[in-house]
Length: 173
Image 1 (spheres, rainbow, N blue to C red):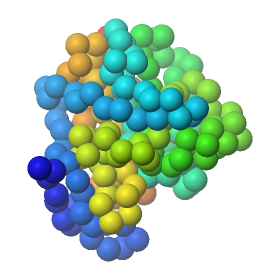
Image 2: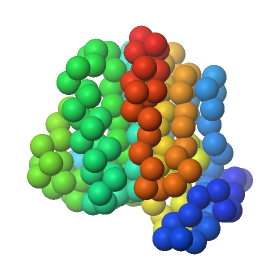
Image 3: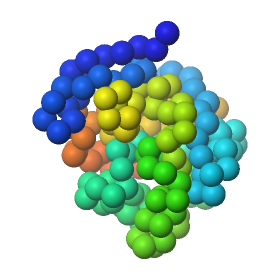
């Protein structure tokens, strides 16, 4: 049975229902299946073995804040160890994501779609039931598959604390 929580976040000024549990540091990171830009299945942990992962959940790349956040993580990725993989996940369709990445010049992060099954959203407590989009959150998962950092933004328009996320990823190396 999926956990449903009402009122912990608002969408367009209205309280909405979030599906899935909030995860916290020391939890085992759930494996999840999403789609790559070419629609191929992508298993978030299995497809990034031996890496520290920064996982950013965003509502839609076509919004100002998500655009800015994804570009920021793409810029930061260039200075990070190759042992850190950044995954940005939204419920946008893969072909829309591919178009956006091309137009934005985003090529250092892996952009993924949770559109098909919302597997990531439900397992990581990010799926907004009414709108079927993800609430903004950031996670760091170490090489062993444990969550070392988890932050759920209290408002969809609020960006994560980049310094904290990046420091947690560096510490997980």
